[in-house]
Length: 349
Ligand code: NAP
Ligand code: G4F
Image (cartoon, rainbow, N blue to C red; front, side):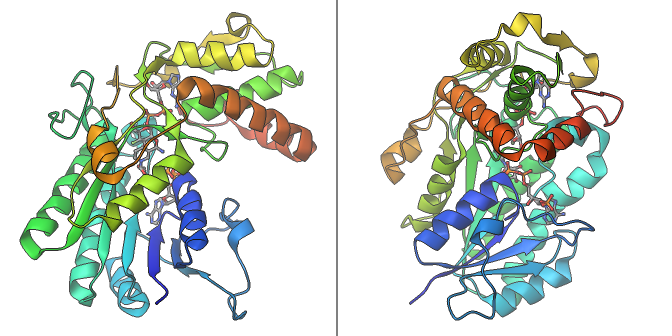
C-alpha cells in the first residue's frame, strides 16, 4: 500500500527536503501551499510533475494555516497516513515586529491542524515542528527534560503548539509528536537567517559585488546541523512504535562570530575587514546559547547527525559561490534586493 503524507510548509527549507525524502521512499506526497502573487515554489519545482500524469506522486493544494475550514476539507479529502506540520512564520526577529500574525500562524495554526485531524475523523500520525527556541534563557545542554523559557513571540507561539500537541496525544490518543529541533541549515536556508545571510555575503564579496555585510549579535551560540539529516529524524519519529517528543541536535555549539570566521576564511577572506555592526539586527530579548543533547533520538530512533556548524559554513559557502557563478546576473539582482547591501530596502531582519 502506498503511504500518503500531507506536508504543511512544503515550500520552505525543511518541507522541500522532507518532500524529497518521502518521495524517495515511495510516498504519495500532498503539500499545502499559500496562494501568492508570484510563484513561491522554487524549492520544490524540481520535484513537481504534471498531476495528470499517471506517475504523479506530488500534489499541491492551496490553503493557509489561518483557514480552519479549509484544513478540515483537505484532511478529509486526502486522508493522509502522516501529517507533518512545518508551516509557520519562522523568523524570530520578525516575530517581534509581527507578534499577532506569528501567534496566529505559529501558535493557533497548530490547533487548527489538530482540530482538522480530529473533526475530519481520519486516523493519522502527526508531527509538530517544535523548536529549541523553547529553551530560550535556560542554559545548555538542553534535552527533552530541560525547562522551557521562551524569549520571543515566536518561541511563545511554539510553546503553545508544543503543549497543545502533547494535549491532543493525551486527550484523544492521537499519535502526535514534537520534534524539538535545534537550528538546521542548508543551501536552501532562507536568505535572512544568519548562516545563509553570511554565506551569501561571502559569495558576493568574493565576486566583488559588495564590500560589507551588516550584522547584529556575534556572541550568540547555536548548535547548527544539516537540514536533510533533520527531516530524516522527523520521519523516524513517526515510524516509532509509540509517540514521544525528541530533541534533534548535533551537540556542537559555535558562536556566530566563529561561523563568520570560518565562512570568510574558506573563501580566502578576512571577516574583520568586511563585517559591520547594525543594531537593527539585535533582538529585544536574545537567546544566548543553544546546544542540544539528542541522546533520546540517537538511542530510540537510531538518528545520528554527521555535519556540524563548522562543516556547514564551508558547505554553504561553496554552494553560494557556485550559485552565483551559475545564475549570474539573476542572482546578483536578488542579492541587491536583500537588506545587507541597502539596509533601508527591508525591515529589521
Ligand atoms: P521556512 O523555510 O521559513 O518555511 C516556512 C514554511 O511555512 C513555508 O513553506 C511558508 O510558506 C509556510 N507558511 C508560513 N505561513 C504560513 C501560513 N499561514 N499558512 C500556510 N503555510 C505557511 O521554515 P523551515 O526552516 O523550513 O522550518 C520548518 C518548521 O520548523 C517551521 O515551523 C520552523 O518554525 C520550525 N523550525 C525550524 C528550525 C530551523 O532551524 N530551520 C528549527 C526548529 C524549528 P511560503 O513559502 O509561502 O512563505
Ligand atoms: O539565524 P537566526 O535568525 O536563527 P534563530 O533566531 O536561532 O532561529 C532559527 O532557529 C530556531 C531553532 O533554534 C528556529 F526555531 C527558528 O525558526 C529559526 O529557524 O539567528 C541566529 C543567531 C541569533 O542569536 C541572532 O541574534 O544569529 C544572531 N544574529 C546576529 N546577526 C543574526 C544576525 N541573525 C540574523 N537573522 N541576522 C543577523 O544579521
